[in-house]
Length: 217
Image (cartoon, rainbow, N blue to C red; front, side, top):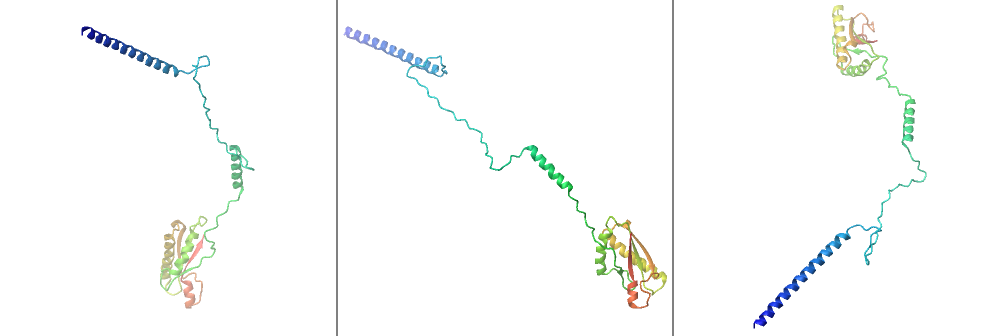
């Protein structure tokens, strides 16, 4: 019995020794693999020895070439210098063209008189339209001044008609000023019955003499 137990113990020791040997061999093999793997990452040169059975394949790398637009047939390349020359030619051509002159606002050389009712200094609707056209002319730069004359027919006293003529002239001047004519350009004067257009003592003559008349400078 004792001999059998001794044999068992010896066998167990032998197995334990064998297991340690296997473990040591396994560890050594793993360390060798790791060492070989690290060495494999090193770049090989032409002087280094390549292990037998190991081959390397080269993969060509494609490099994209810049795309060059093909010139169309008949197209002429435009350089910066040529573009500047063309621009200068256009500017010179525009400079040589005559500048169009602005036409006058209204071509009026004769101004119709403004007429009034008997003993009145009120501007009628029709004459207001005339004054609106005249105002555009009077506002022009070339017009230095406008004198508005007030006139009356022969009926009534001279003093009364002088005052009535002044009211008529001022009514017209104020209306023109409201339309934008500068006050400095406008002046008024009354002649009463002194300068009639018609000397006849008729209704038609009297209606023509009751007026405001313009003198444009």
